[in-house]
Image 1: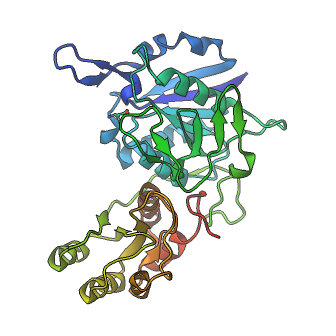
Image 2 (image 1 turned 30 degrees about the horizontal axis):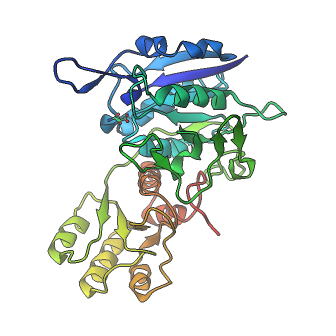
Length: 349
Ligand code: ASP
């Protein structure tokens, strides 16, 4: 029998409506399990841990991620897989952060949640939870884990955690992996896309790709996500880029990584780069990749020292910067590693 550790952080899946205010509030984990008696039918032994108190995922932060890493690292040898119940709002950030913090991960870590609380008649939570547990316990014919990486399972789709974005606030089909194929599809059967699944977490920090788990806890949050728009002002951009504590910027550009051809913008970006700040170019489009050599409007950014985030999601690029600066690496090394795939988060070819 496989052992799965179910970690409950909070989120809609475990919420109930406050009769006085009508707002959704978290309720305790035992009640959540009470609503899914089907779990007993799974040929899996399930142990549980819970955040006390459970949180709405808007309150998730790097200390919560470190807590999750600690729980997984402390229980790594005792379990075959891990399922994290999490609010959907920041699930893509958490999945991305964990993919970097759990270096050398060789077991499944599946994040899931729901759009409707598990106690509601039309809930999507039951199916998401039950299938996630099945996937966390799944093995290949040789007994090794089927999906040894951080994933999000939602509405019949298993996706790489650092490739997902929350794409709908209302629909059950709430997540998409725009730039990477799904790892599995859950229909009548769970069909795995083995070619897309990592066999281990590749990382330049472990050049021999050791399957040994090396948990990381330190993250640096001296960062900002900064989005371009037509009419953006020089004085405001200068104010942001010259902030003395700022170490890195996720710079959200147009199309294939383009920005207006304003000398002040290029000069300010070049100046920030010279000051050791790492500026990462991520497109505002949901799908596709940054290609700074395609247009003059992108080339000027490359010449100013801006690093290509390629086809990374904002969530993955941001948490990767947090992780790399958290290692105490100098800016040049952070820039270099932003161009590498640490956990399958970018497409290199
Ligand atoms: N606000 C909730 C959360 O992210 C929404 C959800 O779980 O879907 O915790």
